[in-house]
Length: 440
Image (cartoon, rainbow, N blue to C red; front, top):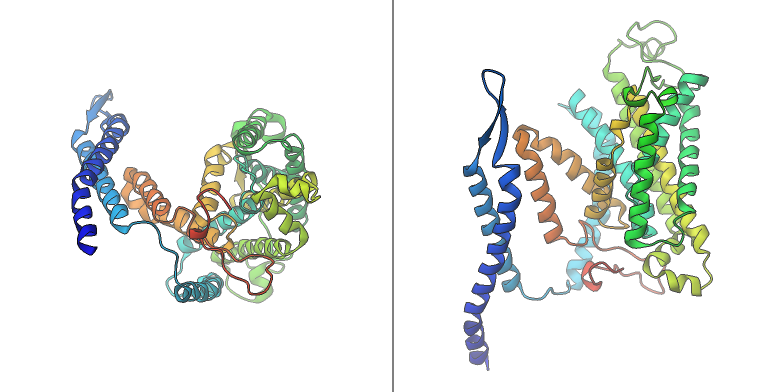
């Protein structure tokens, strides 16, 4: 019997090789069509100041051959691996135990980052940027990961929070601590306004409407010059203070350094901003986890799985959708207010569609509905993008290839398994292998 199986496998090898070569050849042709205009032709400036096209066909050939080889290797690897096998109980238990330890370790590193030897201004600024996207990812995870509503205009709420803080602080003189909840309320209000027209929409239609909403907000900010400053943006946005103590380099009475009797240092404000966004991100995570265990959170997850079944069970779909939009938008508004006070300057160019795409990519790569997965994806995407900065113009290509590899190896995200909120008896982890792609 084993001899017949071996003979059948030997007979299938030529067919497998031909199919793999055909697949890799198609991939190479697609890569050639993409890279020929994007990489093969580059505009340079001549000594006399004129522009000319400089061909780079050697780089195109290398990229096409690399795409051919990688696709050929991937096809053979998938064929030799065979159908995916369910993980054993022992491996699942080890993975669950490692996951429980990973989150506290990651939190400890985040808390101690300013005190780690070798941490300077650059590392703290990068940490602030990563934590901002972690908070945005957790906010969007409520809408996309828990409620199952595809939102491509999340950056609109980010912009509403930023401009709300800037306008309130400049025109009314409110402090950051007063403007922060008001910015979140304003963003939640606009989230409800977005939710009402799209109550009957799902899938691609919902994505198109939310994308249009994000562009409407950006165009309004760009053209309402008398209120928002238009393309010039808004400058002179007040910086946050440490409960009324400004971070001034004078070091006199009434300042942060003077109150604590220390030497004034610009790093003090950076450390304060770092811990501020860390607290806001942890608040977002805590609220999300708590609500997920409540009836509202279970209604979100049920609506994500099957909206028709939810209606049959008597769940109020209108209220469920509106609360998801409002809560997710509120955290986006909080992040926007922090962004405005950190930068001291905002403009419509900071709230383009690419920001929504990055936040959505963080949620998808991390794993829909997974809090720790979103955090890891934000670290990988935002921090990894900085690691590739030395590659200059090639870093976008390397970054995109890394995202493709992640989605090939982990099609349901970095953390594809989840623990049910409510379980009868033993609570078992639902692994990615138990669910069809795009379902559940």
